[in-house]
Length: 170
Image (cartoon, rainbow, N blue to C red):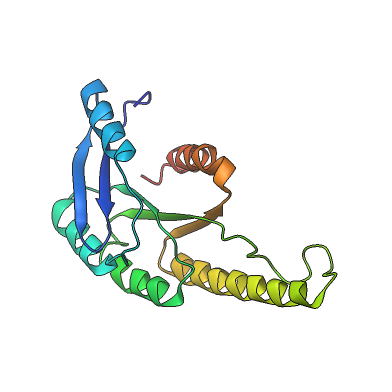
C-alpha cells in the first residue's frame, strides 16, 4: 500500500472461499486485512486445480501470486505442480511454507544420543529431501519456493516482495 501497488486477497481450500480483486486505498486494505484476520484453520485438502482454474479465468493482467501453503505431502506437491502449469507463463508465482519441525539434512545437526533420535533424524531427512525435490521441480516451472521459520515469516515475505520488485519481475 505504501508503494501504491495494487493488492488483493484469495482464500481457498477445496474451493475458492474469498476473493478480493486487486485494488488500493485504505478501504481496500481494511477489507483485505479483515479477510485475513477471519481465516480459520481447517483440515481440508486443497484443490489446486480449482485454485489455478479460478486464477486463470479471473486474473487477466500479470500478477504476483504469493501462495501460502504446505507442500510437504508429495501427492499435494504433485497436484500443485500440475495445476500451476495453467498460470505459470502469465503470472509470477511464489510459494511459501513453514519449515516442518525437524526437516533438515542428515548430519547437519548435533549427533544423535539415542537410537530414537537416529530414527527422528532419518524421518526429518526424508522430509527435507522431498521438499528439496519439490523446490527443484517448482523452479523448473518458474515458481519460486521458500521454506520459512514461523518467527520470520512476515519479514521474509516483505523482503522477498521488495527483491522481486527491485528486479522488475512484476
